[in-house]
Structure formats: C-alpha cells, structure tokens
Image (cartoon, rainbow, N blue to C red; front, side):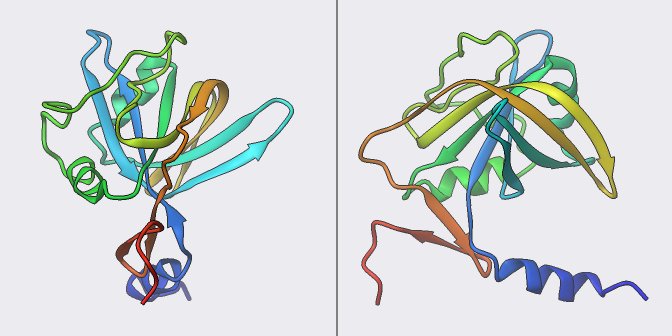
Length: 165
C-alpha cells in the first residue's frame, strides 16, 4: 500500500536542503525558471548533477528544448525570489538581473542573487512519476565569495547568516 501523499511531504520536509532556481531559455531566447529543492551532485568524473522538475512546470518545455540548464543556488535573504519562481507567473525575470552563460545550452545566471551556480548540458532525461529527472554535465560555474546559501527546512526558509535563537 503506497504512503499517503501528506505523510510523504511531511517526511521529506524534515530533510534540510538548499534552494535553487533552475533556468533555461526557450528557442526565442525567452528566459524561463523554477524554484526547486530536488538537486543532487551525481558524479565528479565527469561532473554530473541532477534536478527533478514537475511535469506540469511551465519551464519544462524550455529545459527539454534548450539542451541544458543552469542551477542557481539562491543566496540568503532571497526568499522572495524562491516564492516568485515557484509560482506560475509569466514574467519571472522582469526586474531581475541575469546574464547569459558562455555555454549556449545554459540558462540565465542570476549573478546578483546566487551563492553559486552551475551551467549544465543535458546528458539524460528520465521520466519518474510526476516529474522528469534531468542529468546534466556541468560545463561552467562559480562560487560567489561572501554569500551564504538559502536553506529550506520544514516548509520554512532559513538564512544561515541569521543568528540561531
């Protein structure tokens, strides 16, 4: 008998995770993006990561067509961006600073709002339940000095720069 969805969500919420915005560009170069916490490093040689994207995501078509994506690890204090990119809003990039990576398949880099980023080329896409799992080879990236990542735990954002009560 399968586990109840609410219990599954409660169990998964106990695992603290970084908050990432995965970005891609449509054929007309229009930027797309979504917030996700389902990210995992896979391999060092070659450098591979995976992201899981809901099949109902409006970013999914761009991710599939672009041949790659960028994982932007949000910096602390950027909770408003996590909420915005988790929405179905059409103009998520309006008023947000971003740059185009050197890797043509990559998505926008949110250079002013991330603690680090990884630009990836799709190596494999696997359908898994109500999500697609994308395995990407990291072709470029950076760590932004002085920025700590935003963390999500038990349905709340945690800023690592804030003192612990």
